[in-house]
Amino acid sequence: MSQTAAADDSRTKRLRLDPETSTQVASKGSAVGHTPGVSSGTLNCPDIRNSSRSPRPAPAPNADNHSADPLVAANPAVNTVLEAGAALIPNALNADECAQLGQEITTRLDTVMARLESLGISARSESCPPFSYKEAASRCPGRLDIRFNGGSHLNSLLASADKLVDVCRGVLGADATLLYTGVVMSFAGSVDQGWHVDGDHLSEKQLPPHALTVFVADSTVPPDAGLPEFFLQSHRLDEVGKLTTGEPVDPPVSFPFEQGSAIVFDYRVVHRGTANRSSRDRPLVYCVFARAGWEDEVNFNRQESLFKEPAALEP
Image (cartoon, rainbow, N blue to C red):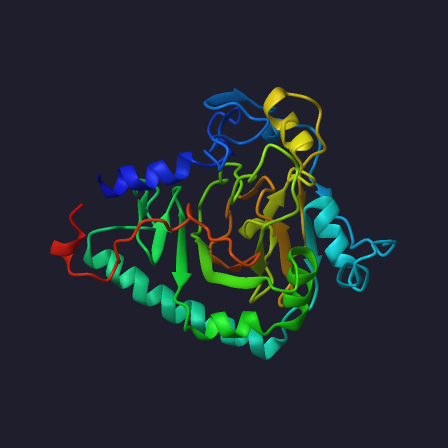
C-alpha cells in the first residue's frame, strides 16, 4: 500500500464534514462496525459554514454540580466536559512551562521537517498528498501532525500538569493515563479543516468517555491564526445524529485561547481547526488521556518510521 493510500484509509475512518462541499460526512468503522446512529458512506449535513449565525462563545465550567462522585464535584470543569463535551481550563501551565513547550516544538519541528524534505515531501505545500508515519502525518493540506516519543520532556511536563491531570482523571477515572503527546502545525495560509472526531463510540449505547484530547496553548492564539471549533454535546449519540440528518443544531463554539490555557474535550466530539489567515505558522500542542486498558488504534497506526533509511520505506 502506498503512503498516500495508507493515509487516506486513516482519514476516511473519521466522521467529518468535507471542507469543500461542507455537506458530506464519511463515517469511520468502530468496534460495532460503524459509528452508532450514523450510517456508513456519505451523508447530508447542514452547511454551517455559510450560516448567518456566528459561532457562540463556549460555556464556562458549570459550578452547580450535584454529582455524587467527589472527583467530579470538586472540579466544575469535569462536569462541563461530561455534559458539554469540552471545557476551557485557564492557566493550566505557567509562563516557564509554556516556554519549555515552545522550545520542544521548535526542536522537534526542525528535525521532522528536515527529514521530510530529505525524502522529497513538502509538508507546507497545499498540493502535498496525505502521508503517515509513526512520528508524523499529514491528513489534510497545510497541516502537519507530529507525535512526540514517550520519553520526551513534553510528555513528562504535561503528565505532571496538575490542572490538566485532575480534570482528565475526574472525567475518565483515577487510573486514567497519558497515551501520547504531539503538536499540530497549521501553516500560514492553511484552510479550514474538515469536521471530524478523534475516535468513535465504542457501543451503540451511550457510554461514558473513554478518551480525551487536550489542546494546550504555549502562546496566545489570535483568532486569525485558526482557533479550534467544537459542536458542543456532539459526543452524545442523539446529538451527533442531528449533524447527519439536517436537524437544527446550535452553531459551533470557539474558546479564547490564551497562553497557558488548555481545552479538554471528549474524543467523540465533532470539531475542526479553522483556517490560518495570519502570516505565521500556528503550533498547537496536544495530548491524549484514556481510561486504563484503552489504546488508540486509528491515529498514527502506520508502523513505518520516518527516520528509517529510504530503502526501508518502500511499502
